[in-house]
Length: 133
Image 1: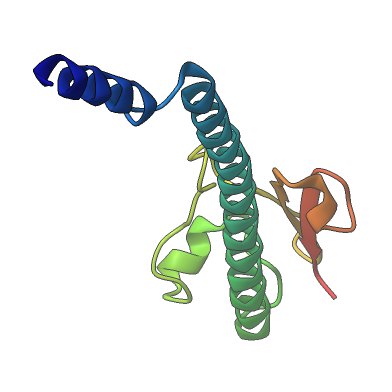
Image 2 (image 1 turned 30 degrees about the vertical axis):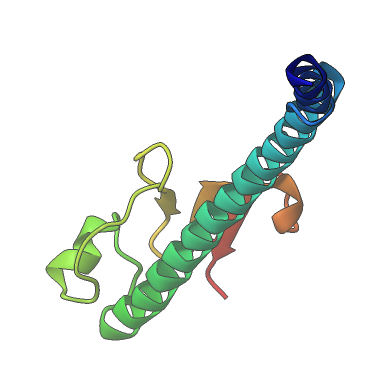
């Protein structure tokens, strides 16, 4: 009788003992695929966020440049002049590289530009430009 009960317990433990190797491999594979998809999507969101920041920075400069033109007769030679005129608090830099945005002025015209990461987000592939109206 004791041998019979022990034999039944051993058979039950083999049937309900845990996960098989195939079940574990399937679960690990599913988790890995989900992780990779999440990482790829997260990277895209960061690129778009930084591009939005670049566009907002250039628009802020555009408004300040137009105000400075109304105050004086020409556009300033550098963006640092906008800080000196108290039109902006500080000069922003690229959110990823930390480099300055490109600003070129002839006095009566100007061009501001930034390199974008998400090339489909603007009408000019790879760049966003703001010029005087």
